[in-house]
Length: 471
Ligand code: SF4
Image 1 (cartoon, rainbow, N blue to C red):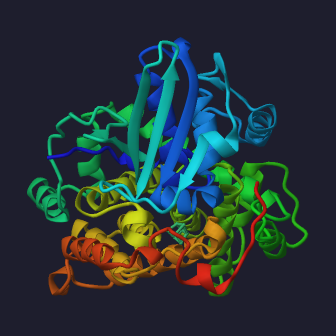
Image 2: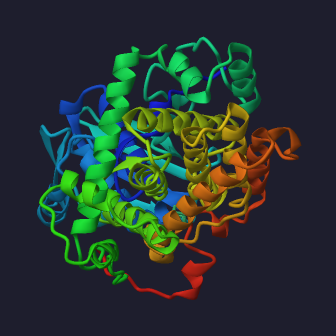
């Protein structure tokens, strides 16, 4: 039984896409590691297949490949330096492989977008080929599975020690419910026990609080930046304006002051609803700008969990840091169930695999914080996903902007509604289980036409004709 840590599902990332930016970036880094002799390389070519090729320009796949080949780490890089680095590679037609070997590299010749070919294993394929000094060619093909996960031709590439066996394995939601019932534990407490197979309780807390800090900082950056998003669609950033309207003339000088101010805001439904949108828009505008975000479980859906977390932090009495940690653990654990039994990849399952999963994760996290039993927590996740089934992925211009940014607000609101419905329901009366809805999501994914699976060939992407400049 596969063990996946909650922190593989929720982790620091870089926008705009976990499958089309982070995955290919990781693949390029892995290719560098697998090269027999980096110093013997005389040239490199990269071929993107399927969805990576069709929406790669809008999703920054090319940028990710260039940065990965240059030896950059997306968890460490200053995102503001990326455009200049890419510009330099393109104009000088030179690339520093692994940061140490200078090669000729012509963007238009050596990075090929082959949207007509879908490799049999997955819709997101990328092949790297290096010519070595002695005439030998070294090639590797990788697949980006969504959520930053990648696989080689033969096996998934673990992002942590995947061989770890947790004390209470949960392949299905039913396993989670059974363990909680047998041990009389909450979902968060059970997840703590399993996570301790990877790290100590204090390390878990520190990791979760580190993510919480990243989330708050990302939202704060988002509400502080106005203007238009990159990519050529002329999408206006709205979080900053909404924040300004909601706060009026109030002044603040730091993230903490801003958050304190928001916590003291009136709690009428419409205002709180606007704050939820503001938080979600802020994160996804940062994501669309190649900013640093917390992937949860993907980047396109990275605003849902922050929006629900900040909603709880600001407007739910008594929601403290302990609740934050437990929320993230539960959300991550629910995400692992989707990863194990369905997909986190929009190229495989449409937007139900991104926004739908993030909404289910957030609903579960919130349900426990509001006093839900383990059964109600799982029911909250089920309800949230149930009302995302069939949601397509049709990003206009292949950019993670329309409908992606607003869709995070919708996912957050549905998560809160799902948690509240679950709290007022008797799980014994529920007719659909979380496992059943995950299975349904997977079957719907397999039936979905490829035009609606991150190819920008259907839906809104066809209704709004765009001609994007090369960026
Ligand atoms: S439509 Fe949904 S799945 Fe597709 S890129 Fe946008 S957020 Fe991701």
